[in-house]
Image (tube, rainbow over all chains, first blue to last red; front, side, top):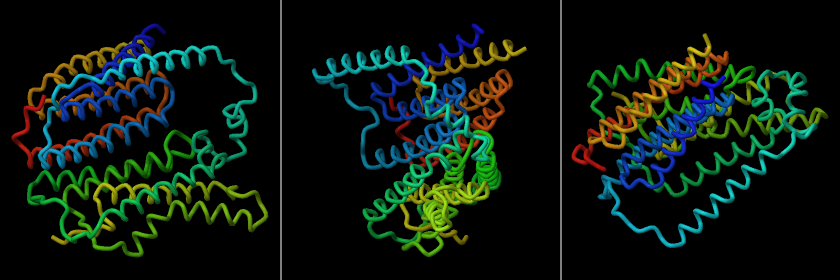
Length: 311
Length: 91
C-alpha cells in the first residue's frame, strides 16, 4: 500500500510546515487561520492513524471551537489597539540551545519508542479482553466511563472549577445583548434555522453512537457548544445578571450524575464507581454532554447565565 | 478500487498544499479565511474517501463535524469583518 504511505508523508510534511509557520509567524490573523488549518490536518492525521475518537475531538475542539475562540480574541485585541503584525525581533540567544536540546530529546524518545517491546499484559490489551464484560462496543468509552471512571469524573470537576474561576473574576454583568446583530438580515435567520438544528442532531448522534462506535460525551458536548456559540453570536440569547437554578443544575449535571451513580454502587454493596448497566452509561454521558456544552458556552459568552432574547 | 480512492485523497491533499500559498500571501483577510473554509470542504472529501477506502464509517462522523463547525468559524469571522474592516491587509 505505497499510496497510503504517500498520504502519510504529505500529512506529516503539512503538520511540520504548518506548526513552524504558526509558531514563527508574525501576522496575527494569518497565524490564526494557519492554526485552524493545523487543527484540520491533525484531525486528518488521527483519522489516517486509525484513531477516529481523537479525530472527532480534534476536529470539534482544535479546529472548530479553538479557532472561533481565537478569532473572537483577535477581534478584541485589534479593537483594543493591538497591531496585527508584530515587529521583527531577534530571537534570544538562549533559544538556540533550547531548540537543539528539545530536538535531541524528541529524537531520543522517538528512538526509544521504536525499541519498546509489546508487554503481554498491558492495560490496553486487558481493556480489549474485558470489553465484552463492560457491555460497551467502543473501547474508548469503556475506558472513560467503566475502567477509569474516577479520572473522567475529576475531569468534569476541573471543568466546573474553571467555570467558577471565570465567574469569580467576571465582575458585574450588565444584562443586555452581547453583540449588536441586525437580525433582519436574511442570512442570520438562515444560519440559525439550518445550522442550529443540524448541530443538535449531530451532537445527539455522536452521543448515542459513542457506546458502540467512535463518539461520546466529550465530542457531542463540543459540537453542542458550537450550537450554543452560534446562538450567542447571532444575539438569540443574552446574558443574565445571575445564574438561576436551571443553569446551576445543568452545570453540575455531569459531576452529579457520576457521583450519585458511583456512590449508590457503594450503598448497594458493589465496588465504588461501578456502573449498574448500560443505562447508567447513557445517563452519565447525557449529563456530561449537557454540562460540557453549557459550561463552555457560558465561558465563550463571558456570562453567568443566558436567556432568550425577546425580539 | 481502494487504491483509486486513496489516490484521489492524495490529489485532494495536494490541492490543500497549493492553497496554503493563498493563505500565506493573502492579501486580504477574506482571502485567507475563504481558503481555510475551502480546506474544510476538501477535508470533508478526503475523510469520505478514506472512510470508504479503509472501511471506517466513523470517519464520516469526523467529516460531519468538519462541515458543521466550519460554519461556526465563518460566522465568527463575518462578525469580525463587519466591525473591523480596515485591518484587512495584515501580513
